[in-house]
Amino acid sequence: MPLRFIALVHDSFKYRVNDRMPKSGENHHAMRARRFAERFTDDERILCVIELHDRPYALWRKMQRTGSLDRRGFDSMMARVRDPDLFLAFVELDGSTDGKSRSPPRWWFRAELEERGVGVGRR
Image (cartoon, rainbow, N blue to C red; front, side, top):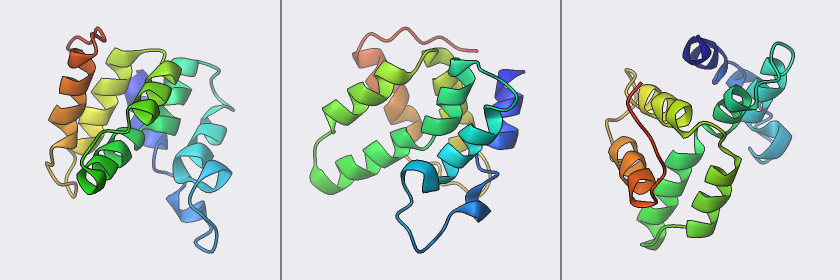
């Protein structure tokens, strides 16, 4: 059930982002989606996935540009994640949908978690 709710809400507020402002903080589509979801749940596991669902991809893109992983950014993200299995499941689900490239972030993120000893199983 959490995955279904997350899938329905996570990108629903892209249209509300003000393109004249930086797409961060309260003006990021994921934060707008989180704020909406907060009206229906206080489950931080779910809210965190909605808010941070694009962060692994952003970290991977930054790594491609700079040649090294932003470890502080990665660790900061994972410090907020309450349910690594749910987070990974949604990141992989979101990255596998039509219209999205089957790019390295899906397998890269799983490998990065395993290397850090973050216990993630298959759902």
